[in-house]
Amino acid sequence: MSRRSGILEFAVLGLLRESPMHGYELRKRLNTSLGVFRAFSYGTLYPCLKTLVANGWLIEESGAGPTDAPAAPLTGRRAKIVYRLTAEGKEHFEELLSQTGPDAYEDEHFAARFAFFGQTSRDVRMRVLEGRRSRLEERLEKMRLSFARTRERLDDYTLELQRHGMESVEREVRWLNELIESERAGRDQRRSGPGEAAQQDTSGETGGLPRHRDSTRPDPSDDTAM
Image (cartoon, rainbow, N blue to C red; front, side):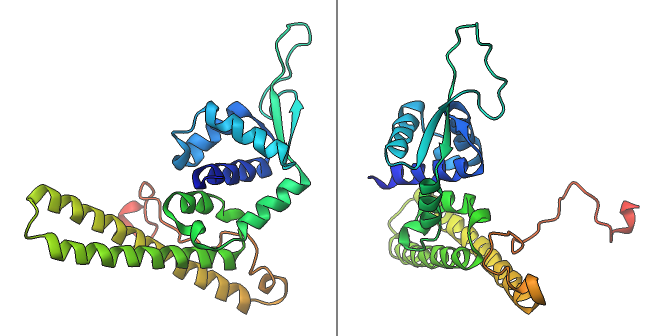
C-alpha cells in the first residue's frame, strides 16, 4: 500500500467514525475539510472504499445518506450506497490514531493526522507535534546551510525562492511551538485540577489549542469599542 493511499484510508475511516456517509458526501468532506485531498477523484476514492469493505472495516448499506431524504419507492431511482464503520474498522482507526512514528509527521500525513486531533489523546498529539517540529528544524538547518553555500552562485530570483521556502518553514515551526506550549499548559492545568478533571488528560479534548481573537470583533478592553 502506498503512503498516499494509506493517508486516504486513514481519512475515510476518520470521517466515517463521525457518521455514515455515501461516496459523494465523503468526497466533498475530503475536499473541503482536508485540503490535502483536493486532487482526489471518485476513481481514487471508490477503490479505497472497496478495499476497506473487503478488509471488514466498512459495510455498505443501501439507502439515503444522513442528510438526504429517502428516495420515492416508485421513481426507479437507484438508492445510494451508504458506508458505515464496523467495530473492527473503529478499532483499526484507533490503532492508526495512536501511532506516533515518522509517517505521522511527514508533510501530507501530518495534515491528515492534525485534522483528527480532536479524536486523538493529548499525549499522542504532543508526540506528533514534537516529531513534526524536530523534522522541520532539521529541514530548516539544511536549507540555511545550502543557502549560505550557494547564494554567491544564484541569481536574485532563485535566492528569493529559497528565502521564501525558509520563511515558510520558520512560520510553521513558530506555529508548532505555540501549539506545543498550549498543549503543555492544558495538560498541566488538567493534572493539577481536582477529581475527575485531572483524569481527563489523555482525552481527545482540544482545550490546549491557542485561542486567536477574532479581529472582526471589538476588543472589550479597548475604550473606543464602546
